[in-house]
Image (cartoon, rainbow, N blue to C red; front, side):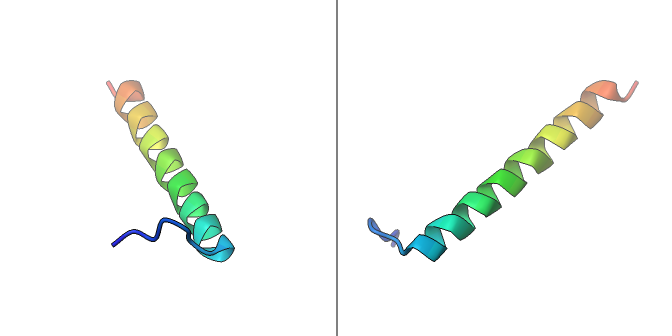
Amino acid sequence: MLDPNPQHGQKKMLLVFGAFFAIFIIIGVIATIASP
């Protein structure tokens, strides 16, 4: 299913999505730790 050799645009979109998801998780963890 996964393309072993994706196009440049597809790889860039995946990178942006991964970064956004990572930031979302980090914010969630920080909010969970900060909340009493």
